[in-house]
Length: 151
Image 1: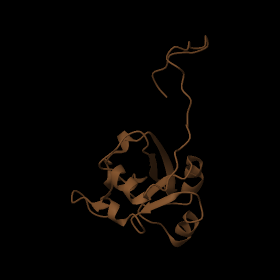
Image 2: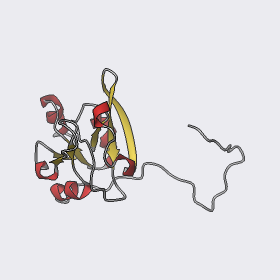
Image 3: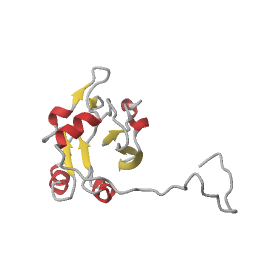
Image 4: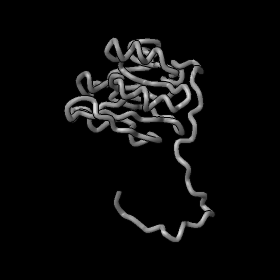
């Protein structure tokens, strides 16, 4: 899901419930988030924004992912149709999956939810591979492990 990070888009809806969030530089000093929702249903996600060329490489590793977005320029949309993902955008088959919040002005008010996105995709997506491996709870830490309180 492509999510707005403009000052007028904050606080975002649902991003804190995403499994993974990538921040992408889109123009100038403006960034957007690519949020992956996999393990839970989220009612309100947004503000949803447009696809960008950086999304291809980022999302191509996810085995035919659903990609929620609000469209994109003609070149981006043509390229998106050539990659292995299911587009559920505001400008194509997913239009009914989106709604506007009256809490903010456009373009910072386009919302969706995982239920609406899954329904619009009509089962055409794949299961993403495991992105990270985690230590088993019974596995010991290596002797070189150090506690930390900051990243």
